[in-house]
Image (cartoon, rainbow, N blue to C red):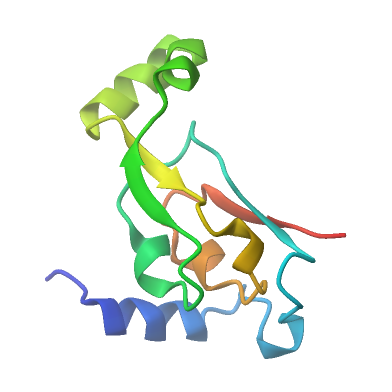
Length: 111
């Protein structure tokens, strides 16, 4: 059974590895990062992020060409899509994206 967006948010919010409400920071203090070698473009990060930090779209061709062969094959299987960060500066480090990503491709980098 496919999980809807509200259920993904509830599951991510209850995850024991989530930093929690006390970790919310001013926008721009923490930096969110996506490992394109792991991201499969499923979009769970887009669904759970309350700050609209993410979008899923085609991977940049130069980035794609620079990746190892096995990673390129995996990306091709997933439509050559990956998560992008058009509003990375809006991140408040709530951690929902980190625990929602099934591939572990999203991380928060702190000060």
